[in-house]
Length: 282
Image (cartoon, rainbow, N blue to C red):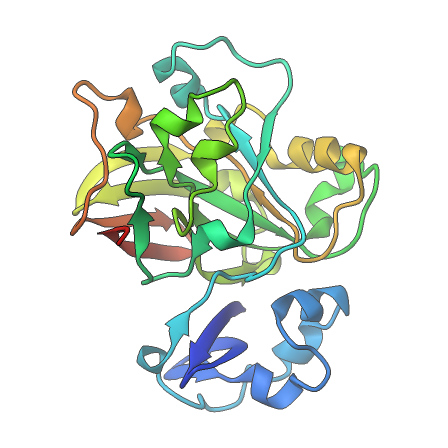
């Protein structure tokens, strides 16, 4: 299934992407589950699957996309997690994952404007795979990790590079208002049995900037789930953004930054394309 969060005529909802458009699951199940996060918390994906044979309620062109999980309890991002990115940043392979947090207000959905802030011109792209957790787990074993995944999506971890380097912590440069994007939808895990077989490509105005296989991850997805669930329980709707490959703007000579009027795309095989216009903050 492809599951989407959206607004239509000013009302937030969620649904399934089917032939011809969207089945509005929120209109049918909204009294039970207000959003996709609540669907996952209730272990109710089967109820959504039961709607998959319905005719579309409206065209996909009639919606505005929201981030797949609009208000995740936790969004863990992993820095320096592709070998190609480690090399271009001239770093040593880390002993443990570099973990930072992104907050909900810093992300937008597919098709929505990503904002370059007034205070910086160093707005960089980072195409990434997002993993959405489907059930609660604490101290999850590596061999069981994939069974805790509800599905996968695309993520653009838009980074304000000068603010990122104000300290040894990444937080400031990773949480500017509407600087990242998440979408277009969640593809359920049953459709992607082996995420290491996925490939990722990031394009700026149609030009390929990043191209990599997920097998190039320094710390793979089962390890990340095991590691993060040791810190505390992972919960339904939590998101793990798994890192970006080489080719970022900061790693180029000369630097390449996103600017007003640009379009940035992150495409992951078996998932789709996350596309966003870049606009200057007013």
